Every structure is written in structure tokens, then in C-alpha cells.
Image (cartoon, rainbow, N blue to C red):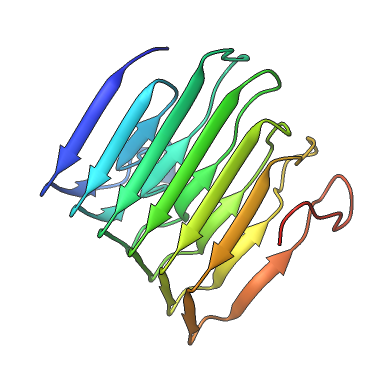
Length: 178
């Protein structure tokens, strides 16, 4: 995947407005506000709210040898059912993520660094984590390796159920972040 995307002053809301169902049960159709797989993307002064999955999701189905970058600045990621930013990537993927001056509010986890190779790094600077179940989590519920790096600097944590959680299901809490 080698796309180039730039979102500025954009609102991504109600993804979808009503949940998909099958025989009366919720069906997760991966209703993310913004889904990033590779290439280069910038998100500036945007609002992503009311999604039935993640505000911003990153993933790759197979290794992406190209170095992909995602930058989010001065944005609001709020009221999404799962993560504000879900970071994951398959082995072989090279990715750099920078997020600054962004509010994470009313989400299950503000940031989750899930299954990632050592070539995945993420920096969150001057962010606000407010009223989330978990502010920042290093780890994943999948039994896959979590080896990516996470740095959170000059950020605030207020009224979260848990501010920072270091829990890798596969490795029982082995961390590579600071």
C-alpha cells in the first residue's frame, strides 16, 4: 500500500450511525473513522467521533517493506467504542507514527500499541488523555508479539480508569516503551 492522504479541518463522525446486526446481535464490521494501512498520511485539526470501532486504526495484513508514516496533530479523537488510535502492524512493516496536541476522550483505550514489529515506533507529545477506560496501553489481546516502541512525552492524564497499562497477553507484560 503506498497511498498519500492529507486530512485537514475534517469531521469524521457516526461510522456507522446504527450498528450492523445479525439476528439481533452486534456485528463488528470494522467501523473505524480512519483506517491507515501504509504510505503517508497526515491528519491535522480533525475531529473523529462516534465510531463503532476505533477512531484511527492502523494495520497491515502482510509486511510492508516501504516506510510508512502517520502524523496526527491538533485533533480530537473521542467517543469511539474501542481505541482512539489502534497501532498494529505485521512483521516486516516499517512505520513511524507521531501524534501531538491531540485530545483522546471517552474511548476504551486512548492509544493501544498492539502486535507490532521492532521497526514500528510511535511518539505521542503534548496529548491529553481524559475520561477514558485506559489512557495508554502497551499490549494487545491477541497472542501475537508486541515489539514496537512507544514514547509518550509532555502529556496529561486525567480521570481515566487506568492511566497507563503495560499488558501484553502473549508475554505477560514485557514492555519496550518508556
